[in-house]
Image 1 (cartoon, helix red, strand yellow):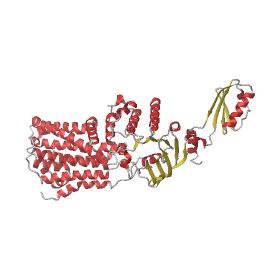
Image 2 (cartoon, one colour):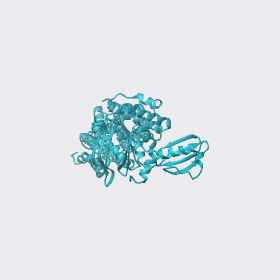
Image 3 (cartoon, chains in turn brown, green):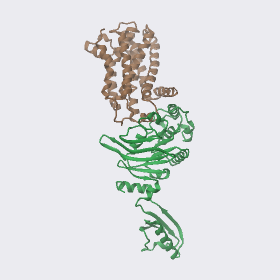
Image 4 (spheres, one colour):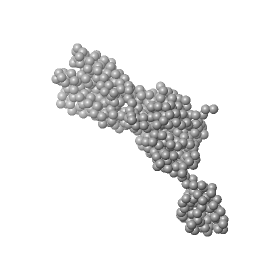
Length: 270
Length: 305
């Protein structure tokens, strides 16, 4: 327990101390939130209704997909994991603790957004706070798991950026943050259901914000949760201690299994 | 009494078709400083990594304090301390945090005294990337010994260190040795290996080509002993003087220098000659071939003895 506390405390401080992580955890989400609030809410007033869930989800995407994988790849390449292994630090701690500390940073960011949005932009508050918190944490687990998995299977920093952007960019465009899911064409809508952001926005709309969900909101919550747990499991299974180690327990393409819950979800009745 | 702490028997490590280590065997005794020498690619790192449990061997057996590094890796963690060549710490960690963090995983109290001892007290709250190379290496050493491991692996521990820090580090190694710690020292610095190691093994092309005390290893070579003599009347500077077993001679800074394959007979003859000439000996220096000379001899011959 003592080891967990020291590890957690160090990783949490790193999230503020490291300039790249500070940017992804706080500056980028909060800066984008203010920009969207001041500009988009003026151009498109109905966006005010979505600003709290959309910016909370954006914060999760930024801190996890853009913040978690690269440090994992760098640590592996720089022999930090080798040093951890020698000192008995288990792989599960290496993967879970940065994800947990990122989630704690995200709670702080979401708190700032939720408190200030009604004051600054006249945004409506969630009608069901418990569901809001539950969906937020579930989405954070799903994205943190996915990000850890990307960090584990990426062979280099360059590939990490590619994989992360492959989820981040479509999430921004199709995930219901900027445009409502209902406005997407059918094919784009089906593709969007593969994205955690779409599921999170659907669940937040249906269960926390008092709006209508496009498809079953509880299915979305369950899919997010299962994919998150699956992602962490796959990350632990596929983890390798150093970039020179030629032995790996499974092929990196196994990571695609993380999409399975979302694929199943597409075929579930709305 | 069995005082073997590290036992390596027929150890083999391959990477695909490439043989990194080919059936080597050696033992390291308790409280010994054992030097592992060899040019890049000789198999030192593979040997160390398998002993540290970072990689699995492809053949033979390895034991560290009776522990199999592969099947009992958890047990091994509190038994060994490792200073890796690259410090292997996150950029933003401070020496204080690193000490608390690593000690917590070893279930021991943090050893902040080691930070002071190794001159890191003033930098205890500085982030790792802001430390100099020497400070980073000292921190790595402090973390490696903080849990009092009976076996310590040091990979190039003094590379990039200034003279004073190097001396301090050597002093600490001697202290640890006196306390019963067994140290495996991988280094490119032959002077360090010769000065610090009780025994050394020279690896070349995946095999051990020489093993023994530095004295034993240097004695087995064809290296010649250098004898430098200075006399008051420079009676040795006359040309044409031949001494037994002295194969070469030269003069430099008032010294007559001889290279001998049999130091006893050459030296006796030189002293007899000085006496016979009524000259007076001012200075006499005898330099045996160093470990570095022997190492170069072995590596240049491709390990052929």
